[in-house]
Each structure stands twice: as structure tokens, then as C-alpha cells.
Amino acid sequence: MPTIALWLSVVAIVLPPGAELVSGQPEVSLGHLAGRSHQPTTPYYDHADPTDDRSRVVWLVRGEPGMVVELTARGDRAGQAQRAIILPSS
Image (cartoon, rainbow, N blue to C red):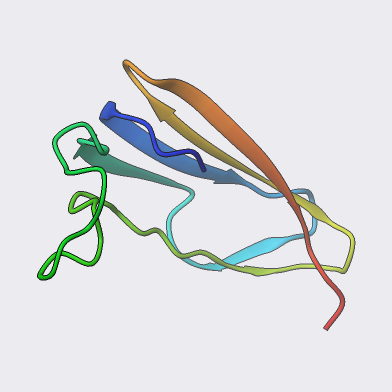
């Protein structure tokens, strides 16, 4: 997903029929993510990551190869980003 400033951010997963969400919640509120606006443009000696305000959401999905899982991240001020993931064969 692109790095953008989000005020009230939410991420969600939508599964196709027949797929199962083994772990994780279908929708997760992340709160406020500040983005990079308050950080230096290049990292310096004690700050390897220029963004100190990130969240991570992990979903474990069981489904057939070729099924399409839809991911959405949305924020009040930043809008919405979507991604479709095709489940691989194992």
C-alpha cells in the first residue's frame, strides 16, 4: 500500500465463497497513522526507519489456488487503496 497520512484508518479483507479466515479479524481499526510528514527524508544513525508510525495486520486465509482475496485500506482524509491477491498453489 502507498505511504499516505491517515487519520482514522481501517483495513479490511473480503474473502470469496469457500475461503476461510483462519486467523485475524475481517476488519481492523488502526487509529491514526501519521505517515512521513513529520520525519526526515533520509534516515540517520539511530533511526534506520524514517517512519515511526506504522501498523501491521496479519491474516491467515485457507482457500483453493486461484481464489481472489480483496484487501482494502481506507482513511478519513487519505481516501482508499485496494488490492486483489490471488491465492497461490502450495
